[in-house]
Image 1 (spheres, one colour):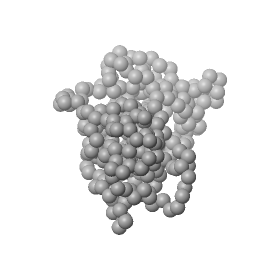
Image 2 (cartoon, helix red, strand yellow; image 1 turned 90 degrees about the horizontal axis):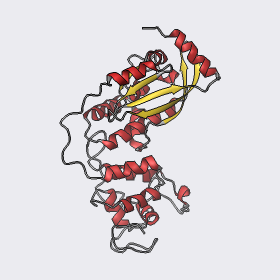
Image 3 (tube, helix red, strand yellow; image 1 turned 180 degrees about the horizontal axis):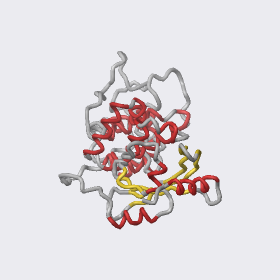
Image 4 (cartoon, one colour; image 1 turned 135 degrees about the horizontal axis):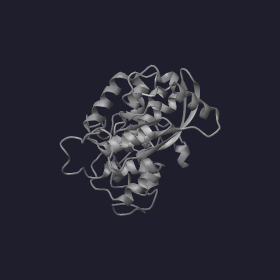
Length: 315
């Protein structure tokens, strides 16, 4: 049993706190505790851990964890006491954790909660970051995100589309092939902003819903690493005001790093391309990543990249 409190048998009622087992509200329908969100950093609240736990709990259905549906459920997803039983802690303890009243939970406890909420490795790592104490000191401003001359030279030497992105997925540099690939966008400035605010994105991304989800999940992961980042705060604020779809996805708290995967796109002059991207961390510049697009050898998309090269000016 992974807990920071005196153990109790799983499923045993928590008698230290009287709680209606049917939901998280009192008989008059009002919240039992003050769970109202408060303004915070980088699009999060002043209780980012609680916001994350609540969002993941509300999206996890009872069927997925083997809990039978009995009677009417007035809360989406799992109830607090159900997560507590799955994690092997009392409802009172889990409630304090979700409300931000439990300081310094152990990694063992957090890992138990992550398993209860069926979090993957990216989401579990995000949970641990949110629970970690904030550093006492941080730089007054972010270091310059300009790519180094050596990285720019590497970028230009690649014979396939590639770009360098920063912490907030700002496009810091791109080679000529990438500029031709993204020719429908104006400007090519931030991968998330382009996805939600540039009309060209709807035709460029053949699976726009997936591209939008992945972009927000990557941005959420970045926000978890530094909740005080001014650029992230500004970007999330802008997108929340200008795109309801972004706000809906941001509220889900899905987390996934930008690592690699398929990228089906449509180029206005070449047509459909089935590309794969790989993301490489730039160790000499923390926060920067090199994103490289490729096509399977001998595939129609590989021929499409040859056409892309033909459309790309030499300088």
